[in-house]
Image 1 (cartoon, one colour):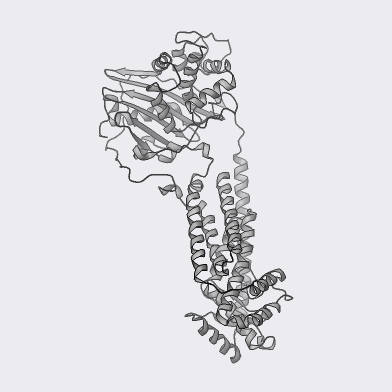
Image 2 (tube, rainbow, N blue to C red):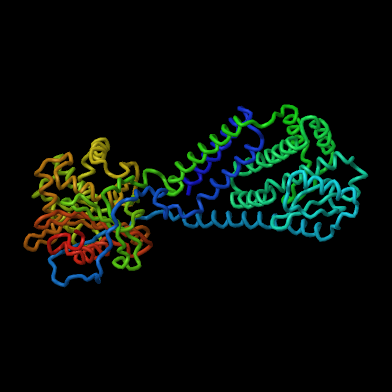
Amino acid sequence: MLVTLLVLTLLISALFLVRQGMKLVRLPAIWLDRFWSLLFVVLLLPFLPLQAVPFFAGETRGVEQRPQLPGEAQLTEATNMTISDFSVSVTRFDLGWLESGLFVIWLGGIGFGLCLILQSLFKLKTIIAKARAVKDSRLTIVYDACVKELGLKKKPRLLESDSIESPVTCGILRPYLLVPEGLYNLFSTDEIRYMFLHELKHHQLHHPRINAIALLFQTVYWFHPLVWLARKKMVMDRELACDAAVIETIGMRERKAYGRTLLQFIEKKQSHSSLELGVGGTKKQIETRIYSLIHYRSSSKKDTIKGSLIYTLVVLFIVLQTPWLALGEAEEQRYSFDHSNASYEELSSFFADHDGSFVLYSAKENHYFIHNRAGSEQRYSPNSTFKIYSALIGLEEGIVQPDTVLAWDGTAHDYPEWNQQQTLNSAMQYSVNWYFEKIEADMSLNQMMTYINELNYGNKSIEGPTPVWLESSLTISPVEQVELLHRLYRNELPFQGESVTAVKDALLLEQTGETAFYGKTGTGVVNERAVNGWFVGFVETADDTLFFATHLAGDEEATGQSAADITRAILVDKGILTGGLEGNE
């Protein structure tokens, strides 16, 4: 959410800069007025389901879609696989109440803004209900002439009211032009014509509808000062556009007379509701409009080309920034993956009520099979899956050896298996935290950072509470887990072959004939709730090696054991554990 607001703020700021640039190159006011429609596009983007659009989610089309074969997922009864998914709970200050509180405040602000809009609407409805049809034939003659002069097919209904001091345009579905009673006693025929032309231009340019949309966006983004400032600028540009349109209609010779008409409204107190568009304005607004009339010049073909080019470039810029809004989170918490050699599968039936993702990579085919694209790129705490690399680092630094026995210091742990001396194999099998924490404790922060960088491990952040892999600062995505395992298998990591072999041996879970199954679970428990479950590993078959990563996210039961069960069900269904990527050729 914070990233979304930041990107939104930058986009609005960019619109301000472009608007200023358009003024510097002296583009006609009509282009400034049109320009603000792009603000609505920007403000709407966070509420659109952008992740469902391949481009905005960063997906590449043209990739072959391979559907899952029919069949029920089953767990085989006969298995040698032994998984000990041990984990400890991390205490974390729950900010849920703060998020909920801010959400309630935001909704409260929207509610208050909607009440103000409804109040304005009620006031306007009351004025219209009390208004009467104009009986002065002189007014209707001037009005009809203005309608004809502008070529309007549908004209607003002309009414007079004693509740207003100057003509106003209003109405979203049914347009009205309201004038004060006794208008001819206050202004000349020419001045009335100028007023009518100005208000009819509001109608012709759809300003009442645009104003209503702007009000709604301002209500939703009531907390954002740039949105308020943007609407203020929008109101000014709207009036300038109408003034310029009137001059285009009446000609340059009547420009001074039109300006004098505007000056008569400087001292008048405007009491229009937010849904009414009047010919007048504040003293500062009238001064700005007069200045614009003094420096007015007619629109040219060159202006049209410049305006269209600027408009197009801004649209392109917004489109290019949209993926950041689609992500809605910090860059380091997502992995940008090249999906040119990936297929996407629907495997929800295996996950039941779990929110999860599955990534499978065939070394033989050099192809990825992915369920839940967004989840596969999202980074999460690795938890105990990082112990694969912690063990490699310990072996490389000589802190431990494959047959080294580390003594238990006597500290009582929740799991009896932890309360004893450990070798690399037993520590990996029982996921013994203290064994791997000891490895990292014997290293400097710089040494650990060097290895993290050489591994290119996830977001490469080790600045949080230790251990950094246990619901702390270090995060990694399922796709990255698979890529790292592939590099590990090919001895492409900065470790000696003996170290890699020792860790692979420690990860072996099951071997049947020519098929060997390797894996490591990881469970993140926060405030006694399992919220982050992993199972990563690879399967060696007679003619292929397949690397996988399954991740579960949720408020409970998102455990490594559950991820392992789901993984095995998928691999059995695909025939991988019986040798080969059956059904996916």
